[in-house]
Length: 334
Ligand SMILES: Nc1nc2c(ncn2[C@@H]2O[C@H](COP(=O)(O)OP(=O)(O)OP(=O)(O)O)[C@@H](O)[C@H]2O)c(=O)[nH]1
Ligand SMILES: [Mg+2]
Ligand SMILES: [Zn+2]
Image 1 (spheres, helix red, strand yellow):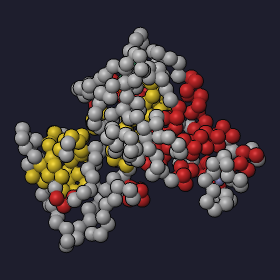
Image 2 (image 1 turned 135 degrees about the vertical axis):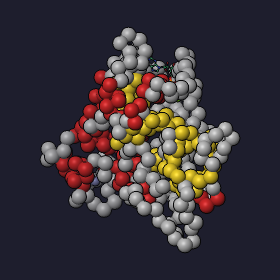
Image 3 (image 1 turned 135 degrees about the horizontal axis):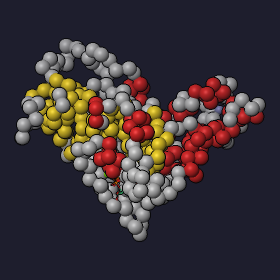
Image 4 (image 1 turned 180 degrees about the vertical axis):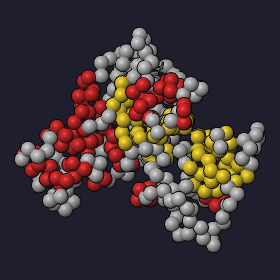
């Protein structure tokens, strides 16, 4: 098989998952392999879920330098008993349906958060402590649209501040949202969140200290995710979670991936032309745009301007789209 897997081949992930695995003479087949899913990665060792139990595994040689990330569906051989000291081997990674990437920044010592096969990106933002930063929300939304993942805005710590100001910024984009409160009086109702997570694989992303792990613990009773405090002077979290972790929701009702808080989200890999595709109603109005039009506010003859002028497009929506487009550029700090 010549189709060498590339982390940066975006097209690759758009293809529907194949039911039958490709096989050729040059490639060993693993008829005795079993299916697993990657739960977490720690120093080259993978924790998998195989048939409902935990199995430690390493990558096998045929995979070469191909990355294996949390969320990957894999084929495994060897000792899959999960007994103490046992180690299985991952021999194949099933083609990914989606991948969430961020471009590494030179000055960023934190691991790149990379997960696969998630279909919903939950942008977790505290309403206070730490303060919300709309620019980080915008950048995460761009990453979601680019990865072909449905975005969900999750505003936490509703006991500390009112969500209305923030929500008003996102209405015209049509991003679905939930508000949570896990402390103080009236805390704990997660009905709406559960509804949104049902049957999906959702990845939580956001700053350190916004309450991602707290939410995971509330949703998955035996999750046991460590939770940190937010420094009251700097308003920053402590980067308590250090690696991505996949958990199944109770009742086999979907999957959730907790991730470490991130400081920046490099979007250098995102092509502007991919963003408009996430807004089919707007894309329709760009059919007569000059070749190479990015549909940004600086473009001289963009169809979006005509559509606003003729009343065909909602000016707020066009403006919000362009704000996202602009958020792609500049510093990647959240
Ligand atoms: N007031 C209030 N505090 C909350 C709420 N949810 C979480 N917290 C607190 O926020 C702090 C940080 O929570 P974590 O769950 O560790 O945050 P995190 O996003 O997982 O942080 P990292 O793992 O560092 O990325 C803890 O002290 C939580 O108790 C909430 O609804 N209200
Ligand atoms: Mg955490
Ligand atoms: Zn245009």
